[in-house]
Length: 344
Ligand code: NAD
View (tube, rainbow, N blue to C red):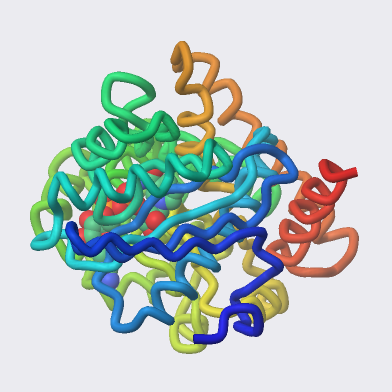
């Protein structure tokens, strides 16, 4: 399989293919960039259709972590790992221990944490083999409430920029995905008097938000057509695509999901249509900021840092207006500048 000429390969510093026959482990660790510090990024367990698919995912996600950490002003580089396999049937103590030994061999150049398919118990096993693990239970804990808080602050920054006000009272906000982040986000929005329109494929999660916050429920495809002030994608990536763009009836897109734009060019279309887009890795950095405060964890300090998301997004929005270029492009450029300045 070619690696260096893949589109997703972006001068990554190191790509490690991990195989442990006894436990069945097949994993890939991608270290994108360590100019700002050790590469930090979660480990995802997913039943990929192909090894190439796993590699591309890890390459893309690790680059995203470099940008996210740089934009959050953290002294951390970007990395990510994937374990290839079904997270419901293939987990074992031996598998996570083997993964931990591979992480340990990198001597702190890569620091792992939870991501999709991985829970705190799995990371506790990894931690038996390596100290290079963050987000452990009993330390900074579940990052989701802090991610939600950061998204809420980011939504306020976007509202201020686009609508001239950062109180959300009476604004119509659609939230897609009411899981760990979406639930807490709805709680913040409701407290400020926003009108919530929500959807989820999981009926229990949906019922909980409808009951707890008086939200209006709509179908999973109807969410795009709602006439709202703000659309907050908090489920999957790539929900802003050629299909949904025609239907979106919002002034702002600001939510927690990673990789919201199916392709970079969708950022251009949003700008042309006058829809303000809060770049995903800037607005959803609350969780990684929280993890960064893991040593002697102090939530107040973590939240103070998360508050900076408001100012960072405002800087991106203003530069976008001044230069007439999309917010996703501006954010990428600021991130890249910070990373190369750290090298010098
Ligand atoms: P989660 O799995 O707890 O919640 C996702 C929710 O989306 C679930 O309730 C699921 O049923 C729902 N969903 C899935 N497909 C859907 C669809 N087609 N339509 C509507 N709902 C759908 O995940 P989470 O931790 O809340 O994360 C949400 C998003 O935010 C993810 O994209 C994640 O990568 C991103 N993110 C999360 C964090 C964090 O701290 N948890 C940090 C940064 C980014």
